[in-house]
Length: 273
Image (cartoon, rainbow, N blue to C red; front, side, top):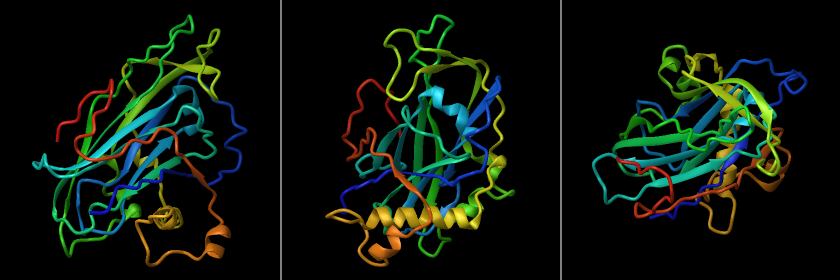
């Protein structure tokens, strides 16, 4: 079995004027699970896991952490792929902002699988204290791997016929307040003030085109080919191709957790497959 070797890559495309715009409150930040979706796919060497953050400029004050896990339904003894992205110090330099990784563990096995995920965010009261208990609750998507089925298609996953069913979480950000004393976290000096209930999601606002999908796929391939024990040894880009790529890739090594099914998360809810 191939050892899990996730390299977490934050993918972004520059959008003119995005950084110059000022955030007006209240505003909605949306996190969408772009891929996989509730569909049937062919097993592949690199199964992508892709999230998108809409209204990314306003996400900085949220201090997001995304936890995720992929496992086979009904098989508690099977291995799985898991980890989390700590985005508290992320420079959201594009909108939407794509975060992605891959697993090499689903390359031969047919079956039914589930992606379980949740997100933490900070929520500040008027005195500048944080409420670390904000938690989205477990969210999931099921998918099937079957030989001869379609290959993963990121463009189709955000198409008009399927976009409305994306798994997502929204945040109603009514403002921000500065941290008091030393309560701030690295790279952040303000905290979001959230209101309930969560706003209605608009996943169809995402428009992941062919060029973007190709760039994400290229980034995943480059990551899989990297390191002393690469997950991919054929079809890898030449060093000159990698260095001259027009897509800017920012490696998010943050706090990454991965392993086998016996892995225990400290102080976070258990996943049940």
